[in-house]
Length: 322
Image (cartoon, rainbow, N blue to C red; front, side):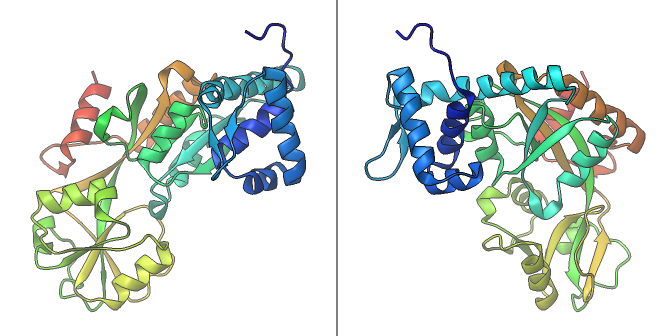
């Protein structure tokens, strides 16, 4: 047992970034130091704690002691930020990992945060909901924002979610698509078209559930190469369509039509997620900010006779309104 150890937060930060990247070179680059200096900091921390935090043979990975130290390290860094903020007047930083990048999630976060005033956000890119859930549980980030759905194996146990926005989606098609001239479409009208999925379909819970619900038999997926690639694919293939939030910006509308969907209107659910046992001091303010902006902009409007939500989102809506 180590007694009376004074932790140097510079060493703790070196550990935290290295634990996140599992790569000394990338961690050193993020910290603005040399790989040699980073290695010395990690070695110094291991000496102070009298434990080995990383295994370094055959690649870098955390030891059991490193895994145990990781959440506590993040808590120590957060406490340090709060201590600095207390004397400088600067507000604490909130780390937000967003996913669903083709749909521009940060435009919604920015509108909510703007209503709060001086909240300092540190946005981070999340690959998908499973990866952000893991980051929240490890303490690598404070808040997640994107589409939340149940994870197999209870990988989201210990996390809390709250719906922030239900956003109507349009069908986006090429101007050469047979339905391109329609003023609006029903989801059933798209049964003879191919749903283009801009990532592997098992990772796209909303699109998969939409296709199952409305019997879209033809589905095509591919790697997520960004919004420009998505647009070019739809523009070039007159048999395809994809779904896109009505408010989200498309980079280039030339050769495309964005057509509202009705009877019913599918809604894409954006949610906030956090670890209940690791609540950020500003979480309450953030939740109030989202609620206030959501009420003024009617972000959570839902009418069962008009709209469609996947069952999991519908259940979450019911819970949040209890």
